[in-house]
Amino acid sequence: MDDGIFIEAVWDKDTIPTLVDNHSPSWINKKALEKIKATPTGDSYSTTTADGRNINGEVYEVKNVRIGNATFPSVSVYLIDNGSDRPAAVLGEDVLREGALKIDFKEKKLTLSNKDLDRSGAYEIKSNFNREGISLSVTFRENISEEIYLDIAYNNEVLLPANDFEKILKGRRPGKQQLQFSTPSGSQLIETSLIPDTINIDGKNFPTLLTSNVVATEKLIGLAFFRRFRYMIVDYRNKKLLVADRQEESGADDFRFLKNHDTTIVYSVDEISSEGSEVKVRYVNKFIRKAHWTIFEETGRREVNYEFFSSGTIGVTDKVYKYKTTFNKIESPNDIVLQDSTSYKLNFLGEPQTPLKDNFTNLYSELKANVPFVISENKLSESK
Image (cartoon, rainbow, N blue to C red; front, side):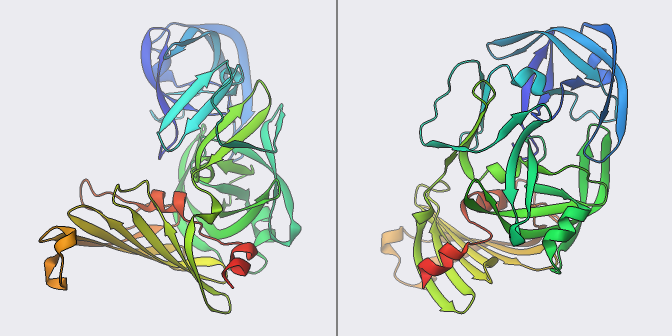
């Protein structure tokens, strides 16, 4: 799920890797269309993508699309040939709105159903299901409120057009990164502004990463924002958006107030290792600045240090230690040896800015899922 939700869907009789996108109609590219039986409807379409480009073309009908045990008959698709094979096909809102979808981030599992789904531990986030999609009322700093549309095919957190982004900055300097910006019209490498912030949705504060670029025309909240939850449900039948937390906010074990606007919080992260792990995070003026993650294993431990720079770069040092003996027999530092050490840089989205070793496990997405990058005033007052 790191680059979107791709499923193996059978279009007519051919299996095609398909992107799930609630903020788009179903579409297919020319190469994939030539492999399957599809009938021109005689209709045409014209639509505008998130980068402001207008695209148009023909509409086709696919006899059926099958996903697991579910079959969707007579699916209308736009023919979009943007020169890319990824995605080759998109399953859009026109199909998804027939029922509900559950995205389980912990189990990396997608469920589509026209029946009620298991909602244990879930709560509703106020949303508006309308003709344009699913919108959420989001409040930014200075009480600036915007309607932001849910787009699970957008892999970052919150996207804003440049003018709206500037209003929220209020003189703050964002980081700058050259990032890929992809829409059905194509993909381009473009300078992107990024800044961590806190937003309020339905009365609840969430730390997030705001992004913007000069071509963005839509206000979107993407899949990366929802990875902090155990799962999310988009229920079209009942017009509800639901989420379930990975852990309660009280998951922080220890608060130590160091000085004005400087706070250290230690979080337990139990899902990474059966032996446990903890992240010690330093916040300055509510924003994450350093994180030290210790992951305990039966035969050793892994220590990952993150340092967040205002330029939008994250410096990472990742060390693996091995025990010469069993853990309960360790008597001195000589019983622990450094086995491997790696240093590298990431951007705020977790994309490597320096080469990494083959088969190296980058834990940044797990850090984002379990540790807030921005803490609220409530956290500060609890720690005093």
